[in-house]
Amino acid sequence: MKYFVISIMLSVLVISAMPFQQASQAMCVGADEVFHFWISDIAFIGTVSEITPSNNTDNYNYVTFDIKYSLKGLEDVSNFTVSTYRHGSYSYDFKVDSEYLVHANERAGVEYFTDLCSANQLLSTEDDAEKMMKELSDVKSIPPLKLKQYGIASHAIKCKDNLFLIQKYNDSPACVTESTKQKLVERGWTVNEN
Image 1 (cartoon, rainbow, N blue to C red):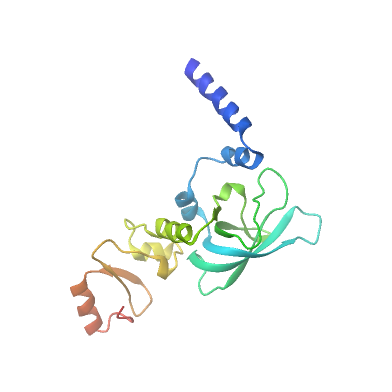
Image 2: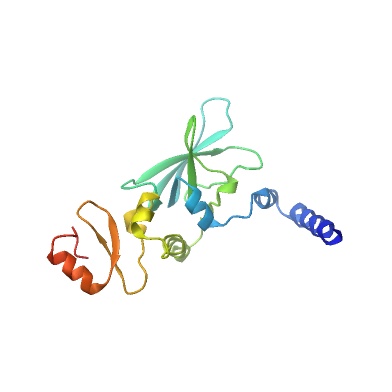
């Protein structure tokens, strides 16, 4: 019990010494980007093109992004708008012309919503974006058809080493060996030969 009380006291001390936004984020349950990727309805990497306050008295901003990579739930979209809190401990401080990894969920009354606890991340370089995209899409232990059912974009599905992603004529994905891929192409099972 003594160690439990000491650990609680140290946690409070560390959180109180953080800047306000970091302290608020520390209150979010300790989940990382990969966890939020799986629980979010949409995930993408994009650059903020516009931030618009809501027209009424609610506490929301509408943040429009130019989509660079759609990772989950968005296909063939060049820009997308999400809502976030305008003020308060759970608002996320998006900046125009900055690139972010964004996770958002559908909410009643607000189409897609994100906040400080959604594990959004400022990406400072192109390498950050590529690394994050690889980390989030490199979920090789889950079969590609299941990933597609979860809403993962087809181009974000990655196969295990030495396997190749193909699309069946009905758009279902599969990971196969090179020799199997050739046979399936010959038999017309796949729509693409890449």
